[in-house]
Image 1 (cartoon, protein in one colour):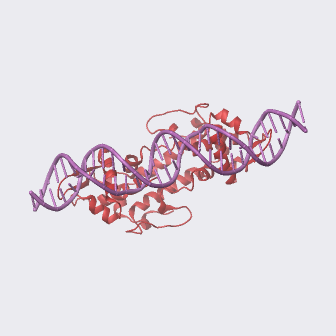
Image 2 (cartoon, rainbow over the protein chains, first blue to last red):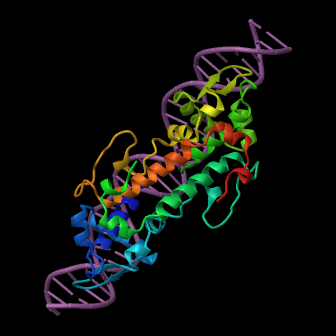
Image 3 (cartoon, rainbow over the protein chains, first blue to last red):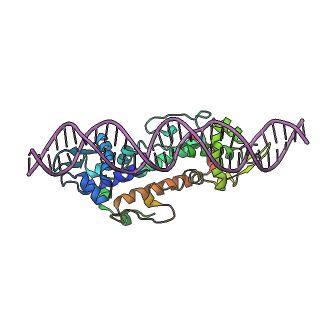
Length: 142
Length: 142
DNA sequence: GAATTTCCGAGCACTTCACTCGGAATTGTA
DNA sequence: TACAATTCCGAGTGAAGTGCTCGGAAATTC
């Protein structure tokens, strides 16, 4: 997981916190979250193309979540920024690609399938609405 | 997850399959698994330093698992080859490092903590013994 | 028309990935 | 003792990805 996912998530959670309050400029987000603004521009472009945010140009413009915070999951954000959740090539999400040359049902495939499933369940189970109003201490019990 | 993890896992599962049959040469593994032998050399060096395999030099030499297959988990292998399981800096395994500048309990931290926990549980729950004797179709139900 | 803001593309230093290569040290076998 | 098979070790390399910066065009509001 790179900073793309981290920064992007911070950005999206920030937008979720300001849901219903009109557009939010990247400048404001960058300052609040202490992130490089020019870099955020790149990331938000990807999120926009993925249909997760809408941008409005001009003075007083900014970004808004394209859907309600409760309808956007952490999985949506991660998938947009880091690509599909697939630890290995032989576990592509959606398609069943088998590239294990010698054995089509190699034992190691089980590892990646289970891992992928585990990651996807964890990320798809969290919505921006939850993340926006909850602190770590309350939510996570490791 | 890079090919280091994939190749390394295939290597370890192969060794597990030949557990009790003496040493296995990298040449044999590379041929069976259709992997670049010279590259495997690098990976197995890491696994050896991590105490997961033992090497024996000379003709008829090769590698053996350092412990019984049921005492080595997929998590051991991944951690050795890909580093500690930590999706973000702020979720280092073992230590509690907080580097979120503005908010020490930022909401996004919950994402990474939950994700990390999920990955670790999945990987630490699979042993080489299981993987060695089971095919994908039997084990995984996605 | 001027300030603000999103859009867009290019570029850049750095690191990692996925290897290859050459060679030394060790061990079994003929 | 020669030799082949191995593990060990370090260095190097091309391609890709990371994490940015920069310049500028287009749209919108005041």
